[in-house]
Length: 110
Length: 119
Image (cartoon, rainbow over the protein chains, first blue to last red):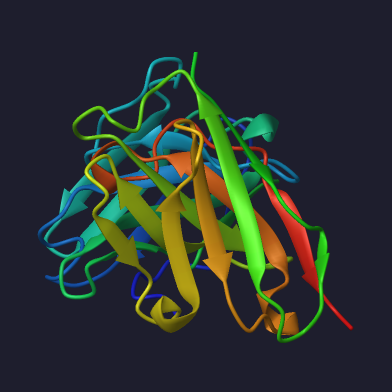
């Protein structure tokens, strides 16, 4: 059972915006950087956001990350059919001395 | 260009030990700050972080699996080996290795290898 909780699914029409929450605690999100990963069906996860809000080269600015206390949020604007995927948050947990992933969120473009 | 690739058996029997190898290129595991991690994903389920080895041979393990896991540098400088003992059908999953700067799975992952545990 993951220590990071995400909603199982979110959906919106093309062009709209979705946000995905990631809820943790002071031992993980509250004191460590959060990363976000996109996993398209049948493929390996892809890094979307690192250090809470930074985007690797090649990731469009439609994807954004933010943190507040013990929660993190991934935002996707201008939703496209190609954004249909599973999304995971991840961070170090200082108490566990281990990296932890969130429960995952499936994004559906209506 | 950084690449990683997992290799190992696709089928193991319950109680057996699984040995997976991650062969990488484009970076050195002797460079300060560099690490390689293992992550798995059971079919239809979420990602689960397993273990990590740092450039200085420091290691971290998932607390829930620590007693069954061992991560080491391979005999080749560009390999990392993960062993998991006492395999069970619930360990059936796709196993990934990832370049993990400062311990965080980053922008480079292997394609994954599906391991099925069945008698």
